[in-house]
Image (cartoon, rainbow, N blue to C red; front, side, top):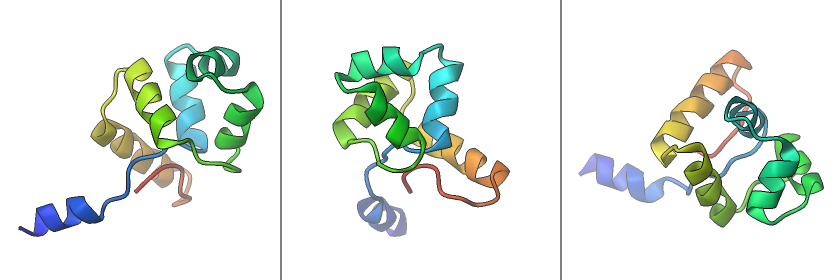
Length: 93
């Protein structure tokens, strides 16, 4: 019961910051290529990676599909990045 309650309270995952940049590079995408796939500008990708904007839920879903990841895997990756970076937030919780 408690787990269901937590799932309802959990916000949809959204990429931003270092987590997006690291995964983008790992999966072999340039910012230009990712922007083309998401039908947005390279500037917008840059703003997401520099934590000035969060990625929309729709674009996050598309990005997860491109990277072959599910939301839980992405959340776990973000936790690792937060730990390495000293607790700074780099993705949805």
